[in-house]
Image (cartoon, rainbow, N blue to C red; front, side, top):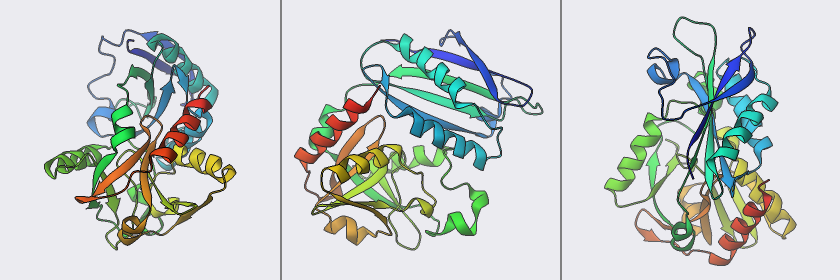
Length: 288
């Protein structure tokens, strides 16, 4: 498999009106591009399972909501979908992902910049089997920050990812694989690139999306499937005690799918291997 890149073209209204395939090995961005200098833009990562996108409509809807939150021009989802499919066709068979990026553009200009980049990723069989060791880290905001301070853009998938990379380095320093953020007033939030799901008996529960966290596309799909399998599904205010008491936990995302949590702050947690297998089989069957 190889990487592939499409640059979006934009009309006078700031909406993408097409794309062109370019060499991913050749530099394409201007040095004053705001995506690089200020992180002023949004993105969406779409998993490709054997070359097929996983629930693209959900991703495009979330992409549009992130753009709205940053006052970026409204986009035609069909144009972005066409760019995604073009690079997905070039990246080849096997599992991969496509990153869709919309930036405010070159500093001082009035035309956005956008691209779709596809690249393969290694399999996650070991993670699905053995699980992830996670640590709880304080995000530094109250759970109601999205309501009290909407200008902080909590819940938008922005390009400002320095903090999300820093927490992975902190996790590694603590001998862990991943992170679950906790609000400053003690509520569970999300992972840096994933959504938290807990199992309590025949119930699945996730933190509420109004807590300044990203609405999980994969979590939504898991809940739709699980409801049909007889699980009660809900979004609630959850605390670390709820995580400790849960029968099982996962961090779910469109690239890694359902990754079970095997330890929290060094305390082992049971891995529900059967439900992990069933969830991931369902997600793989959805791609198309």
